Amino acid sequence: QYIADYTVVSSLDTVSYTNGLFELTADVNGNASSFSLVYELLDANKTVVLTDKQPIRGGEGVKTISFDKKRIPQVRQWNAENPALYTLILSLQDEKGAVAEYTGCRVGFKTSEIKNGRFCINGVPVLVKGTNRHEHSQLGRSVTRELMLEDIKLMKQHNINTVRNSHYPTDPLWYELCNEYGLYVID
Image 1 (tube, rainbow, N blue to C red):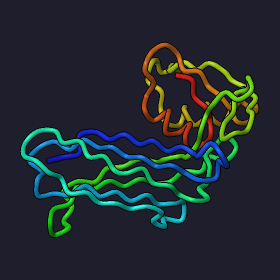
Image 2: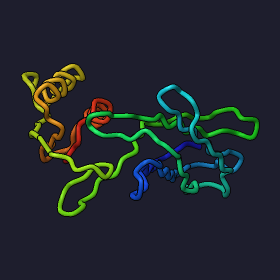
Image 3: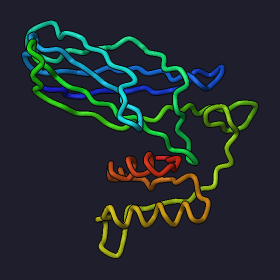
Image 4: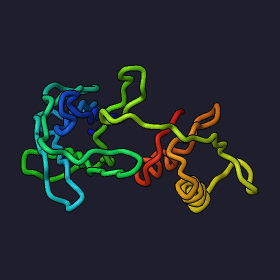
């Protein structure tokens, strides 16, 4: 039994942009009928903001577990100037609470929309100052974490808030670093 995949939707209400909306769906594979799927969402201080648990029903094969949408009042918003992130921890637990697997990711609460012909993040118009980026260096098509951080540092020093990736998949680390340091990504 294992967590095969999961999808997180972390947005804001589009009335006040102060309340977070959190949705989680996960696929669990294997014979996990005696297990439960548990999640915890932690803020920057490692305080649990949300938690939920669902038993897994059924025998062999993939089971999709959908948690109800939750509202988080006064959530910290993510944007390029203030990349506030939460930590999601998913665990697969047996009846006694022993954990068979952990996984998770970092989550930012944000909206992007066109309002009155203007591009807005969290309801606020944003001026896009961007550049293109190819996953390439003097080492070839292998870009290290250090080189990625150097790219981000240079972009931030020059008030660039958006990066357009080239026409092929980028290393997943790049997306995590953009999330952490505050860059909008056009993939």
